[in-house]
Image 1 (tube, rainbow, N blue to C red):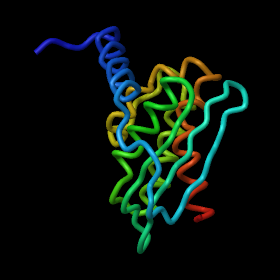
Image 2 (image 1 turned 180 degrees about the horizontal axis):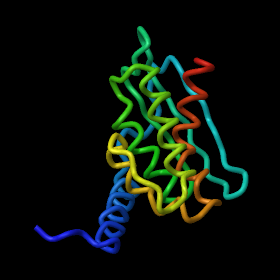
Image 3 (image 1 turned 60 degrees about the vertical axis):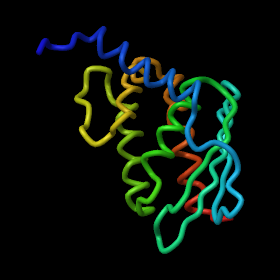
Image 4 (image 1 turned 120 degrees about the vertical axis):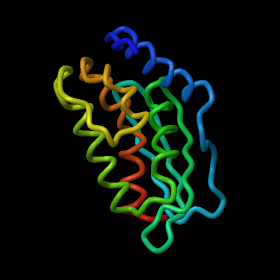
Length: 148
């Protein structure tokens, strides 16, 4: 097996972002949502609304509606696939880990537990795009905190 080059990894990650942007998972309103929140990025106009059904401290179902760049839509899509059926405490930990990941220097180690969120490693080189990538998680945390 050959070692992957940085260019290969960047291409793979870019493909993940494009896939989730073009065919986002878990989009639209959630009829029986118990929690929801909308967060926007006033610098670029991105808006993400998260609808969640939370019962007994577990995110039972999760959907999002988003308008904006590929990064915000793809990150919200990936977030919904990773958070469903996890506890709200686990969701908070994942959100914190992802926030820490995108704020880290570009050459910092990549944690093993981020799954497809590794695709956003390139965002670390562009401070203005970090908010785009974390918008979905910020909306999720606001939804958990506020309820409906």
